[in-house]
Length: 399
Image (cartoon, rainbow, N blue to C red):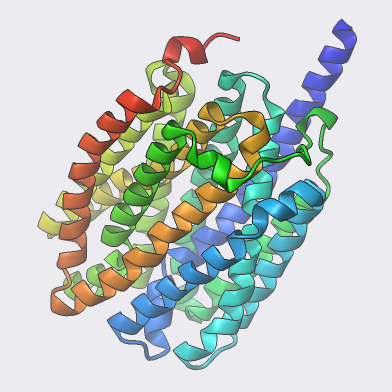
């Protein structure tokens, strides 16, 4: 029996590290395209409002594709679902690189956002790797925070370098290649038997009866949306108001990844931060200070610090997966992780529309609004924490 446990542990560890490798490439692709994405749309002739429209429409597409995702997770191979849908996203990046007008981006965006069906499957797989709360927190931190942070230390700076020398389209080609590499790695994952999703999943209606899930869901929408509101057009603000070059904006994306990595290491090593709500408080506070520096700064060194603190955005987002993984019954996992992706998509859908409108009034307004939202979220997080009843740090460290 002890040998079976050791074999299972070794298989789980191998799967976790393979998923980590796939996430490195997958999130590296996002680093290639996301930092300069608003500038690429602008280069195709889009106004700030039209940039917000494209990014917001992408969020709408994301929501539409996520709605049936839990049904697919319950019925298809997790490995093939993750690998196949990331391959579709790789095609989407290439389609976006080939367009000549901003309105021609939508076919590529459809393919890119179809690829998000992979993430509820990936989250379900990660949650199934660990049998105890501490294991799940560690796996989610490794794959959803450490991997993206490490990958995006290099890729945004590389994107800026590519854009300066060969144009913004090359960043999308690089994103496509990295996503294709991720799909290949995910296709080779061997899923341990105990990590396979149960086909007897619950319903979304059942989630409504869990007050802690509802409160955490509302907080997630507000957190992602509020932070996205301030950051989505920050590259345009830096270029148009402060004259920062594309290459330097790429560096800032890498600096944000360093911030995420440092905070992720703290989550992994510090017992207090292994309570995901403590992580949310620290990450949201960091983002708030980042917004303030972005508004008040005039020197590039101040913007470097602001983007270092922006790393809290990614850490806050991934912390919600730990929250849901802990508070949700096992038979509802596929539903709650699909819900988490929908909530993240909802936040990233509404924020760009509002940011585009505010930017046309004054380029500083989206950042100022993000600052106000982040400060309010600090109080909201403490309130939700008191009622959600997430297991304490002591509980997380046992098992």
